[in-house]
Length: 179
Image 1 (tube, rainbow, N blue to C red):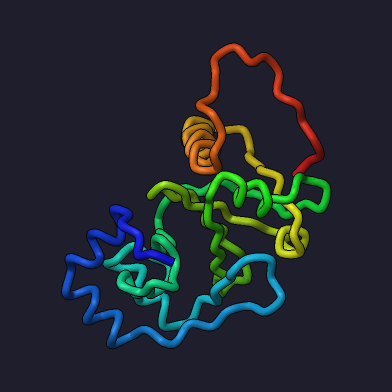
Image 2 (cartoon, rainbow, N blue to C red; image 1 turned 60 degrees about the vertical axis):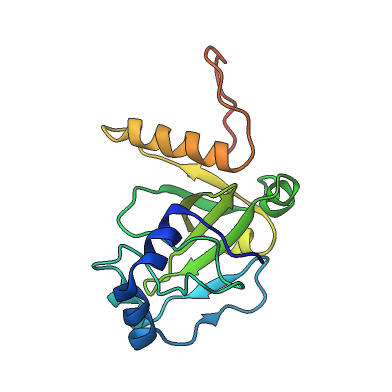
């Protein structure tokens, strides 16, 4: 994989303090076996990367085989659950040239990052078995004051997944299943 030049990597590459901290604290990465896409397992050492670097796991920004951008911490994320009945996610994303990486957090939850054209969106996925077996996911959101943030994240996810810009006046959206 070619080195990616996302804004996050440009910043981390420019900070010698980050590279020194990475070399001092990072452990060799471990990955889950038998998953439909690469899922890194967060380590205790990765917790030190959250502050002040605002990332969920140490990553070498110069590595050619790593993710195209770091897993960001402190960002609002969409919530989803794996679904065996949803359209398979990986073939759809491969068709638009997107990359998928996962990070299994110490609490057991899975962060899925979808990247394309230097942009990335993260989704927190629960009940991830169907997704990791090659299925899709169903987005979930509780109606409340944070709806504008969720709509912005959904629009960004749609954009990075290769979808066209949403149009006004589409009427009702089909609903399938529940969360």
